[in-house]
Amino acid sequence: MVNADVWEGDWRDRFRQGLSTSGVMVLLSFDPYMFDRHGSGRNAGNMDPSDLDLLAATIDSLSNRVLVQLSTYSANNDNPQRAVTEAVRSRLSQVGVDLVASVRADGNMMSLVLGRDVKTAAAIAALPARFEAWLWRAKMECRRATPKGKNESEMHR
Image (cartoon, rainbow, N blue to C red; front, top):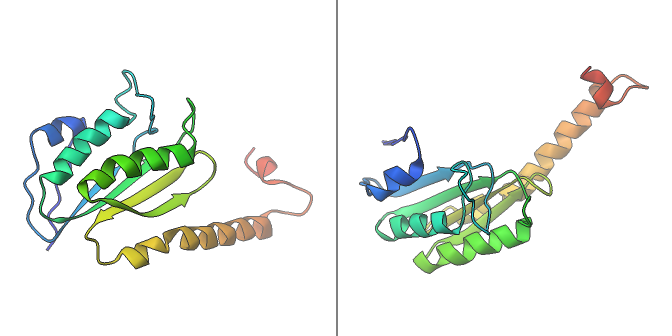
């Protein structure tokens, strides 16, 4: 049985209320515009270190296994993937959440998968290789479908 709690509005408000969970595992999924390790200012669509503190406090209050998925779509404002990964990993490791996989689409977009007491960590760790294989197949299919003498940008006009 799966119970879902989808919050409409700012997730921070929901987490400040506390989470009541039942079941073996809790999945927390975040899809902000970007993670800004310097602070997001007033853009509620971004995540920053203070958000990780709220997330860590919430996770620490749970006795369940935890899986966290966090995506970022921009490396702007001096937020290279390596630095973002380290900022997220170091904050969440304080509550027993470890980096399981990092799936990078390019120099900007990536998803981090982190977990606490996750028994399928080995399967999740294979996500980067699986994504790369899928991306390669998709590119090859595009090349096959593009008429000779045309490039992809010309096909979208």
